[in-house]
Structures are given as C-alpha cells and as structure tokens.
Length: 189
Image 1 (spheres, helix red, strand yellow):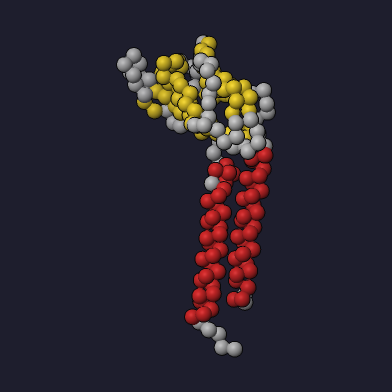
Image 2 (spheres, helix red, strand yellow):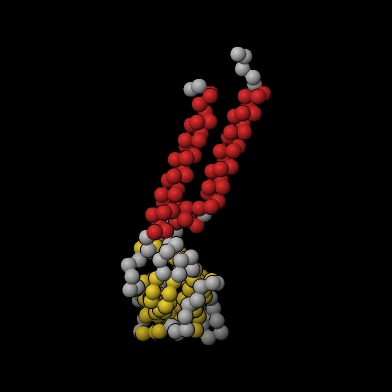
C-alpha cells in the first residue's frame, strides 16, 4: 500500500467508527429506553434483622426527549424470601425527584410508582430482604418502554462525548506521527 494513502485510510476508519457510534446513540436516545443495573445481593444487617441482605437497582432514563409517566417499580419475593420495608428505599440522584408516595407492600410484593422520569434522570433503589433468593424486578408503565441492562450500546450513550474526543485524539496523533515520520525520513524526489 502506498504510504501516501495511510492518512486517508485512518480517517476513513475513524469516520466509520464515529458514524456507527452516532447511529447507535441516536437509535437508543430516540426510542423509549430505560437502563437498569441490578447489583449482587450483599449482607445488610440491622439491629432488628441480623440476617438481612439487600440488592441495589440503578435506573437511568437514556432518552433525550421522552418523559415516562407513572413508572411502577415492582419487586416480587421468591420462595421463602421476605422483603423488608424498613430497609427498602428509593434514592433519586439530583435533579431527579421521586415524588411523595410511600412504598406499597402486598404479600410478597413491594412496589413504588415514580410520577415522572425525565430524560437523563437516575434513581438508586435499595431493597432489603431475608431469604435465599433476591426478589425479582418488574416494571409497569402507561407508556411502552424498552428496558435494557448495561451493554456496549448503552456504554456509547453514557460516554458519547468522550468517545468522540478519543476518536479526534487518535486522528490527530496518527496524522502528527505520519507527517513527523515524513519530515524525518525524507524521500528522495
């Protein structure tokens, strides 16, 4: 391959990577997408419940234009598991606001309705339980929602700016190295 074409191919490869990232980010941010991440159960003892455990769910609205209304987060106990109301809590990450309604407990269910989830809002939900299996998670909404766990696609949405800064940095470095090499190793005419 002719060395004069190297900058062209580097630029083409980075342009394709940039276009692909833009396409992925656009597809996710224009569809009604909520990302959720469930942490592993960890010991969370209290004075009243020394055998208590808890799981944490991180919930993020990845869209840029969609506000979800009346999103209900439901945890269902499995088998001999019991959900502990005194350890269960909703923690909005500012500027998010979770509303004023309390958690509702029915049998093996714990549910909370968030009145509105605006674009970019994040919530951390801590659920305490006693038992072998952690509660399962379910969502209910008036609107259609695409629920997804963290993936390489959602990584692009969360790190879009830094991805493009990295592409620009790679392009500048590659261009600098190419032309620096040409200045050091001058080809005879």
